[in-house]
Image 1 (tube, rainbow, N blue to C red):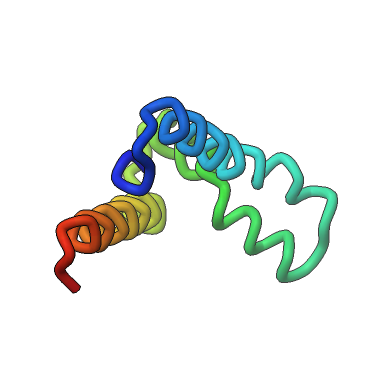
Image 2 (image 1 turned 120 degrees about the horizontal axis):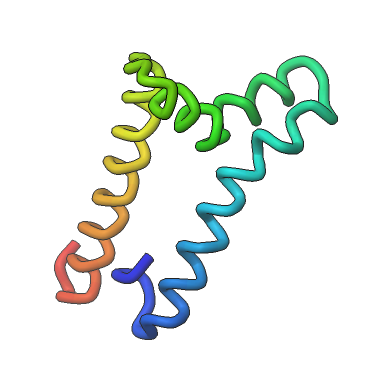
Length: 87
């Protein structure tokens, strides 16, 4: 989020809120049923981190974090290009 904002405080707060939403997605999943529950469990960072904490290197968890890294880098790259005036 730091490449999207001129303010470090705004970038830090945005990152904190986004991270909390990913962690809390798993907490609200038991309240739902069906596809919504499954989707929230897949989006939950906590569920994927629990596997790592248990010493399990699950392919889905690795792809989950690599996907978020790729999304973040793509957004940052496009933001920097836009700031430079390139497309």
